[in-house]
Image (tube, rainbow, N blue to C red; front, side, top):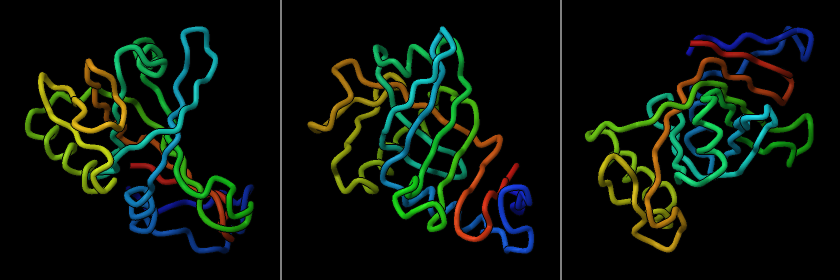
Length: 172
């Protein structure tokens, strides 16, 4: 990502933008994310979910019958949020919004790496077996009997809100 640009309309233009390394670290460490998709009729759909930030992209899993999957069938544009999301107050912490396009991951070399990343990050609560380019659950953590499709969201735009910088935008 490029160096962040502070929007002077929404913060102190003389503040120092957070480094991309800081933002990348926060996205990696987040335990819960929110995924926003768009329904066929244009209404938004937001849902909390676990995921993995890996090599500069966000990865998530969804079952074929879930609302987010139905939404992605017609519109792959998404927003992913992470951070305290207001929990620390409007002037503390950093809330992060990643905008991008969700694309299905079927790479036989990447999927086992991602399955292992989920297991390590969530300390064994999420264990996946990779079969037929899908994740299948090996624990009681959810995901359905038919397995789940894995999606990657590469950032088109990342916005960071909070602290003295107000709003900072990063673009590839």
